[in-house]
Length: 269
Image 1 (cartoon, rainbow, N blue to C red):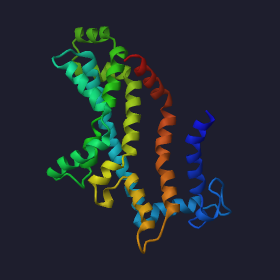
Image 2 (image 1 turned 120 degrees about the vertical axis):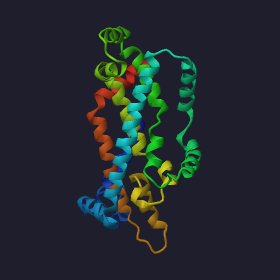
Image 3 (image 1 turned 90 degrees about the vertical axis):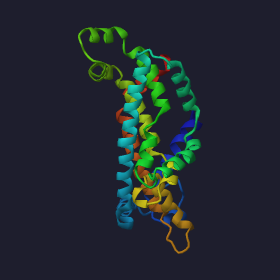
């Protein structure tokens, strides 16, 4: 337990401490303690203003990819999972097998074929090259499927149909409330996956104005290896610290919902 706690907490502590140091103090002081000069707020200001404020542009790009990509993936997963759980149709077993197989395929294995396909459609170096692949979440679909089986009683759906409600109205007025914990869980998973997505934007985008935070910060980090460029490790660390704050806040605010959704989905499969 202690080893696990150290493995998970120490990198975060190291990041917070070193984001408060100047570029020179990063190499002249102990890594797990503060230096004499506390430069956190200076580093934050420099990070936000460096290179005409490109970091702010990367934050907005990441928010765009998360809102459209992760939000769309959650909606599609909820609709598809609910449909597979509550409706019987030919080929349902085949869809189940395809979804299970897709869960086991790592995203990096699909990155190059996806790039070739988007290149044919002239969509590379556009936000759509990152957003469209993010809309597909086999794990989210599977989780919503298993959750919807028990979370939405068939008796409620039959009563709504008897009262004359259509399927879409039943879903958006009744079922979606019962599916809320599962939807929040899928939303958090897809948000984290999209926020931390690195390899796909790296091969899809060549214009820094469309970079997400992950690719942009790596570009700053690579400046140290370029001839004639000034290393900005203090800004890389401060930018990394700023980039994880929204994710941590989302987990803390929604922890009750996503924990209940995750546990319910695990026992109702």
